[in-house]
Image 1 (cartoon, rainbow, N blue to C red):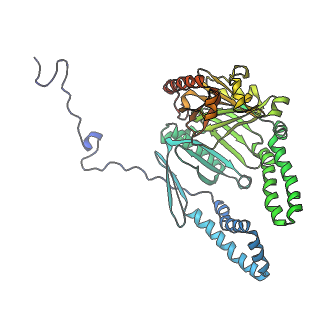
Image 2 (image 1 turned 90 degrees about the vertical axis):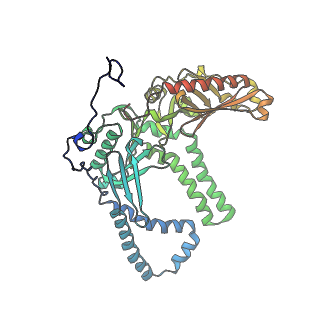
Length: 466
């Protein structure tokens, strides 16, 4: 015999009590309210950094119009200069103090909240699960003062939010807490997790870095231009301002391509941890970056001509979705660099030079000589293309990271039966297999679309510590 409305084998389950009694609360009692997150301020040294903003505005105006600035300076007397300094210094100090006073941050169960702004208020609510990298930067003066800067890479954000400055210990503790929370740890245990341990994979000796920069063609090109162009301009114009306006940027470019890179890439160390690859570098300004392997879209192995001939060194660059991190290894032997690449792209082996397929010889009628630097290889895991004759670059795109595939063919290429295949990635970058046979390109287009579809089904998640 069955009860009407109840199937055979089913049993009557009394409905769960609703209201306060369901959670063991007394009738009329209010549910406990969530604790209000404690707002914190930045380090007290921050006002000194922000006080330079008014001075930077004046300096920018002077650089933008040096003739007018020189004319105004010649009109000022000593008394006027002293009065201007007496007004500017307190005003800059007050500005730095007020911007620090009106800046707060707090960590809730699901967000990092940053409130800032003196005249125009800005509130940033950064969801913790959207955080993909947190970099710790310590400029020279910040290292002297014992403070650090946190820079946050957030999915979908065009630029990094930052907290500048925090005490060094506070910055590291906050970074560890945010990463633990982003990985899914409970708020009450995130403080206890601490920073995940790292294992060193590679360290670039300063001597190798200096030699590598000296063997870079861009360094010598910028230096020659900086030494040759200013004297020529002086002989042609006899204008000091013209020589300075041209020579200073050239000298700056020469310094950035050699001394600047040496200072920035000094003591480059790559370590492996559960939250990604950690990169530490810098002589004056120390930077601690994290590269989540799941967010890497493209890996490029660059081999300049002099490096290939003399040392067998390579440079490894990255395209990371939503991040400005672009260098993984500034210089290293090819074997060591490929070992690091294997950590970024698990299960991927770098194709050898012999396995790369060149375009057909008729491609030389479209691009003379330089067509020999083109090459392509497709494996079970990556789409790889090479370009460049003097400075060769091998780009590796995992099939799971391909967003779209396109085939293009200009009129001159159609005449010779050639086409280009473009592979677009999630970092808004494109890798191109150039000057392929038209039939081969059509087949490559169809096959790559299928490989990308199946690759995304088997891809690892892009979460922290996954």
